[in-house]
Image (cartoon, rainbow, N blue to C red; front, side, top):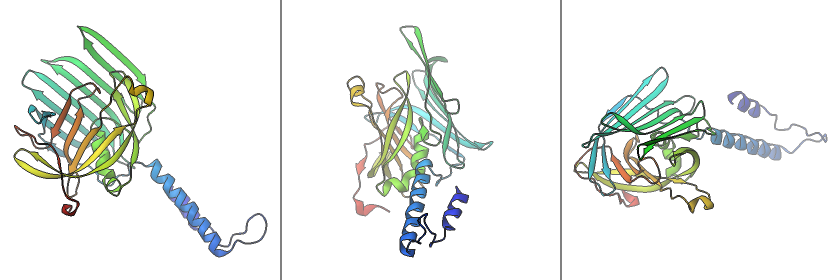
Length: 293
């Protein structure tokens, strides 16, 4: 891409068209600039999640709550870089013996790309649900147990590298798209989802404003982002897919603050995950625009 841009800049402004006569310098300049703008715009589209906020090592203890803010599970978040890959493991332990575990692998150069994702629900060591996505192999699987009967699915998915994400991958994507979204841009990406059959859907990312969120006895500011799945009209007759809400810390540097949405499958209960674990979590409240830092 860099070599191509250099070539464009080297085009003589008075270059002659095939007809023989030279274009006026102003028209030639405008043509070159328009072409260059188109190339840069296309490059931006192809690198939908340009790396602006590189992620490194992190360790935290989030809390998982129900939609009303009642704490249900203690969480642990681990993130580290190894062999050029960004590894993430998030786990939640419930008092009844259930455990949720999410794992993901990313690369951050030349842009943010997701390589793998998995989510597992178990109780007392026995797996009840498991979902996986291998972005390089372009495959996704699902395993559920209903009435003591195991059901499995395996599907090929049309992954667009750097534009397709699952789970916590969207939080990382938002961290890098934050400036563009706050400025009013809407970005379309692809999401690997499950119904529980693996599916690929287009989602639109947008900015929802600056909010205050109560957690762990504190009131924190967060930038609110909305992930809206674009479901075909005919499919809406059979399935309802709620929006996912994600808040990042404000002011920057932006990092995870809160997540709200269904656990995995659209029909799952809506839950809330807070960066700071506490007995009670409060709903987000809009902040006046003048309060932004």
